[in-house]
Amino acid sequence: MRSIPDSMDPDVVRAVDARLDRVEHEYDVRVLWAIESGSRAWGFPSPDSDYDCRFLYVRRAHDYLGLRARRDVIETPLDKIFDVNGWDVRKALGLMVKGNATVGEWLRSPIVYRGDAAVRDELLALAGDVTDRRALTNHYLHVGRNSLGLYASTKVAKKFLYALRPAVTLRWMRVQEGAATPPMDLPTLVAGCALPADVRAAVEELVRHKSASREMGSIAVPDVLLDFVEAELARAEATLAEPRPPRAGGARDRAWSLADDLFRRLVGGVPQPVG
Image (cartoon, rainbow, N blue to C red; front, side):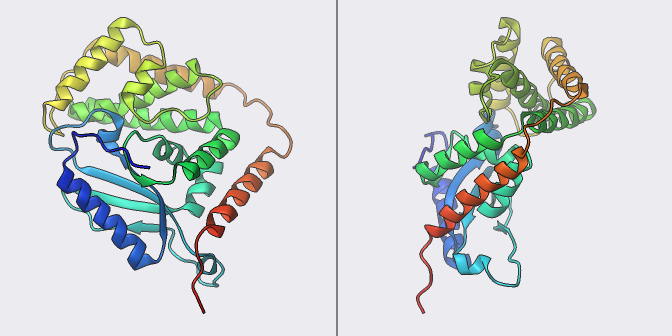
């Protein structure tokens, strides 16, 4: 599977592909899923935005059976253009069960460098079974509050957008109550959360401004957006302050069991060394 928009520099995309090839060769792993994260995938890039490739990989079975634990992150050299790193799928599955939102976002990125759609679908199905919406709410609330504080001290448009996306995500989760994993990108979130017309227009104008300005350019955000973000974050705080509803007996054990089963299937699909 591959989905690369025409707006992305083809030379940079080829360089990202080459890095992924080197990762597979040098670390003897298989890249299962590689996507763009960051502002390009979130829907509000600047002309000077860097490229944030994230990937999930799996090792051979015998690598997981050794006495010495292997590092569960692979990082490639970081510079002004490239930020390319990934997680062992074992780490990703464990974090998913614990309520981490990052894995679900990677699986729903609109920009895909390479990947097996069937594997992506299995991982999304697992997320649907094990995702703790309260943990997701806490995650997006934390990100939103921190980013809003950074905007207040810097007035950098990027920092406000980093608060806006979590706020819109929290609203999307409330409107789409039966869905498990929210979309990654702001346009899809906006389309699915019934924003008031004035808020939606202000969001679109802010994204237009960001698309024509420097990555760290400043802006005076209109009150309609500041009020919207504050209201959504406050509503999430009120929800988390309520007593947690009781979970079904054995729910956590079932979640780990489902994740274990998928992990074994993924490892079983990797050819083993000869001899």
